[in-house]
Length: 94
Image 1: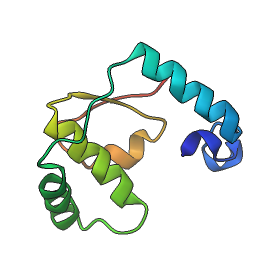
Image 2: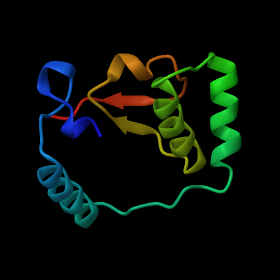
Image 3: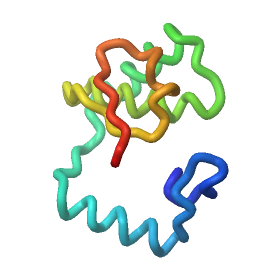
Image 4: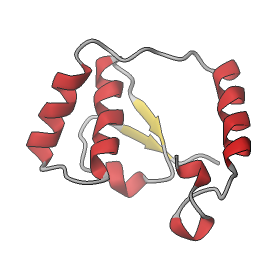
């Protein structure tokens, strides 16, 4: 989880306990959606179309999840990592 990644490496530098508390707070504030049934097909399409390898496969899964639920906006610290995916409104958290 990027929240536990060190700050110099693009994370928040949170401990595992701090991260768990953050996630619990988020779960109280937002509706948690299940994986859409077509998630694997959407993900495989993105991986093949964009030549995804390595860590970017996780980003592609988020994009596939978003498509499966028709979510327009993605909030991320990694704006550049998601620019290649079309039809995606990107926002950096404040």
